[in-house]
Length: 433
Image (tube, rainbow, N blue to C red; front, side):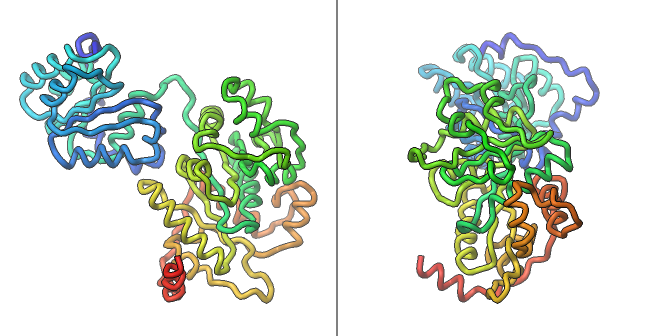
């Protein structure tokens, strides 16, 4: 940590006088960038700060970082690093006078390795203290109380590439039951985002044996997602560009082979590199996920900024959707809840669960309800077109456009929660599990 004694930062801008006060107002965390693969050790004096750092370590955006929390503050850190190498980042909770903090940081600097960065957390909202810490090379000073979003934002800012492109927003679509139309919705939403917002969009079809993105967009690419994941050593921007199939001015697909020439068995992190590369290059990446539950599907759901559950209004979809929603809340406790889309609503002579009851059972709101229209969807599918391309003023087009706005963060749906009439049925289903 030679930066503690080498760096100097002067705060001459009047706007920076309020820098410390802004640390506790970093938002909900929904726009935070994922943290790269770094090692972090924290030395805390209070249980509340330790709890905030531990909560941050459990967040999906910190999944690549290795974080360990110790108690004892600065003195414990100095003792610890007398015989141990320092990590990429040390987080210190420190209280005391400016002179005492300076002496302690000087002692820590002697034990730190070059390149180690330090974040200090304290209770004193003092610009003089802040300036002195910055001159000593401290990367950031946070004023208590802090929460997990403060921690994630700080680590992300320190290790993020200020010259690099911002990470794109990722939206994952998954069906509550096989054949419920999740892929069709994902493809139409992708097309809507690309056309209406004039944003670059990449649609990644992760259903390798049975993916339909190529068919739905009337494309027949020879290469796609399988080649990307099979060549991690060669994967770069140029190779990825060659693997993408252009569907419109702003929309490209990374198609699945949709063939059964080999088993498609993958490990949890096999898709991480290609996903990171796509997010670095385009504003919006859509994951079309297969209806299965594997380590890599779970990992992609955890990494996405938004998750959309597509379901039909029947009992099997209700059970599976409930399981998905509950699991996603467990895996993503600090994220927006998943969006719920009810598809093929109003099938003639089919008994259906009411939308309000379905949503209440999943503890979600219905962001889109798409009616059963076999003529419209069948024609689009056979023509290799999106619904909006068929022309006309179908309500389905408006619903899909609205869903595109919601999933990209441009609007939100507000609907009242209603008490479910399915309480006894859900209890019965849970009892069977």
